Image (cartoon, rainbow, N blue to C red):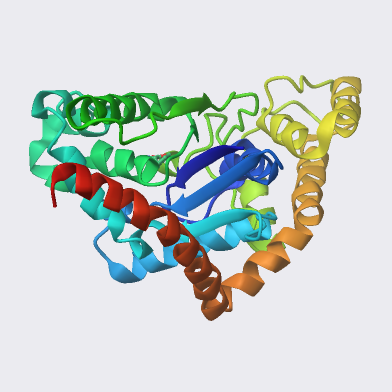
Length: 323
Ligand code: TRP
């Protein structure tokens, strides 16, 4: 049995790109019978950017509701909120004391902002050590991450090795599982879908709002209705392809190439694919969002399970340190 652990950013309601590209595959991995899995919402990392409690709380709920709506089974996976396990901040401190300042200055999470030092707080600077603590506190074997997190994983391995070397075997040195980027979901403007680019589709929105967005924001060329059209570069077709699967999207491609089938038709089919395809998930998402008490209960159960693992590991570390 391998222990898989990953942290989930909670910057808002997960969008179509997150759902298809990351959440679905992660849930599949978490449910695999050969894996023992830990998934948590990284709301302490969020504090490096967000300072409004209400926003933090809402983002956490929306993230949790989306994972649960997409089928995460908390009987098969330990699902918790990072801030509910305070042991992690303690371990982060210990790790900070074993990691060279110079190496932290090389972290992308910090370096990307280092030209505007007035915007950098100490939390952002030591972000990689909190992430290392997230992982090492649970004796994780594998950590599924996107490519942008590989450097953080490398630092995690580095600090674990340094500690083991100085203090004796203490930590399991984890390996990364790189997510293959097979599903590149374009945003409304054709660039990769991303919250920071303001080009996202929120599949939990009401159908009316989705319709407006798709009709207004997805760019198409001005080819007249009767003329043949090229699906390959069209955002509307690419999104349909990601949603509707091989057979249906091939059919739409043929219709576009044949002429007599307009972008408006394609948009209508895309809307239907999203509205109908995610009807169950949308209903579940809103049920969870209307019942924060139920979300709290689910996350509390996960936190209790997580702390059962975290406590003894932290004790192991403390005894090595002489506390
Ligand atoms: N930093 C990760 C991200 O931005 C989120 C994260 C926090 C994480 N702690 C983690 C991922 C531990 C994997 C393991 O996506």
